[in-house]
Amino acid sequence: MSDVKKVLIVGGGIGGLAAAIALQKKGIKAEIVELQKEWNVYGVGIILQSNALRAIDELGLTEEFLASGTTGSFLHIRDSQGNMIFEAPTPSSGKFNKTGGIPRRVLHQILYNAAIQHGTKIRMGTTVEVIKNIDNGVYVELTDGTSGAYDLLIGADGVKSKVRKLVFGDIEPVFVGQAVWRYSLNRPKEVENISMFYGQKAKAGIIPMTKDSVYIFIVTAEPGNPRKPEDQLHILMREAFKEFGGLIAELSEQISDPKEVIYRPLETLLVENPWYRGRILLIGDSAHATVPHLAQGAAIAIEDGLVLGQLLQQDLPVEDILKKFMNRRFDRCKFVVENSNTLVKWELLQLEGKLPKENEPNAIVAQSLMKMTEPI
Image (tube, rainbow, N blue to C red):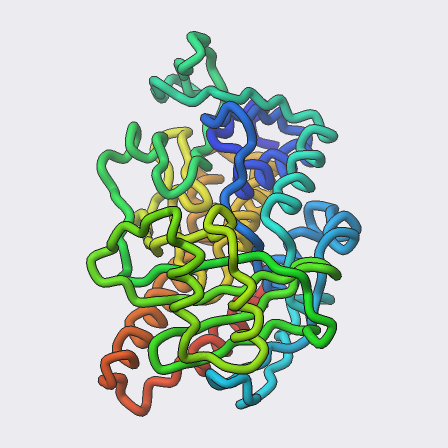
């Protein structure tokens, strides 16, 4: 086993909590510092492809997920009026051949509870101020006035990562020209699987989250990334659905509370290989933030923690372990980021009527999701 016994994780989101669970299960002491003073989980719901369910199972949390979330076996591709174009089965990742959906807050609570149960110490309202590699470790000074040394530091503090800025310099996410709107509603009885609706101006969807709830979303082109008035978000979101008919149109009419609309401009980022400096390592959105077009952001963040936990069991120098980590993670995460960005570009070209006929977005989605079923 490596000499890593004590790890500081900066950031208590999905990636940070999953890493803490994975490390604690391997007998490595994990501590999380989280900038927010209280958990304020941003978002509505989350899609978990079969490889994400496989990762959750490896964390030992399948039972908790199934008790709160929901699963489906097919993806329905529809036109703007709800007519079925085709039905695609979920590709299998090991024993998992379903796609999951769950409220983000619920998934975060499941991960938080598991991290605490496994012995993770979590400090809220605190983040790093100073980070320095030292002999066989990392020295940190925190914003609460404390300091300490750790065998490894993991930056899991998201797309605006402070760890990345302190250690890697100015690497900023790039706005891709689109935004996604999400809104939670009661689940219609007829909704069993994820449905995607393709219009001329936008792409929309219905995502089951629990037995009683769904969220609807719509992806829109937003040239220049304009600011949206917060008190008008419900009106603007309803207007974005104007070209759609059928069930999704009926659901969009129920959008009534601007405070419940989650509007997010889409950004992307990929830190070049390697994602570490000395014993400071980036994971999740800190290293590879992706747009949601393949629904892989949470999956690859959880996978990061699992792979790191496995590798730290090897009796090797930390430098060699981190090299192995990059060998297993970089190409896979780069694949997700780049294919997701390709889908963005194709969708924007489609809006302009300039997408070459040989470029088929549904084909690249199917090929990408099949690729992600491969072992990590």
